[in-house]
Amino acid sequence: MSLRPSFRFRIYSGDTPAIGPGKIALLEAIIEHGSIRAAAKSIGMSYNRAWLLIEEMNKSFKSPVIEAIAGGSKGGGSHVTEVGHVLIKEYRAIENDALKATTKRINAVKALLR
Image: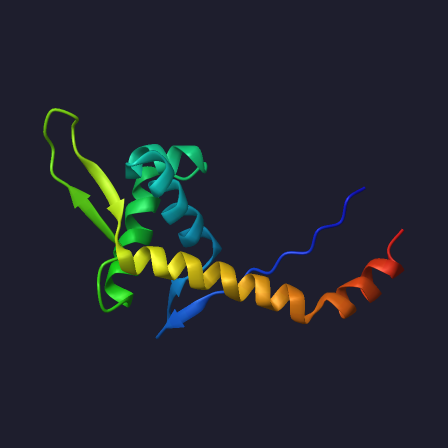
């Protein structure tokens, strides 16, 4: 059995989670797949849910995190903006910092497990 701790946190803007693990996963999937539909499918999320999360993110931040690419011969798609890329980087850094800061305590808990 392999034990791997993970931190799941959210940052709220009012009552709305501006960013959290699902939104970060969606942003990363959009980078990988180039479209909201393909990204949502790849992470087991409905297209409608993906759009709802994108709208929440775009309303929560000063600049959009996702922008549509107009159609054309390749059919368009979506891309993560520079703000979105910074958001992913900072979110993953916070996760990493939290893990580093709590390693001693995590190891103490691991020692108690079967």
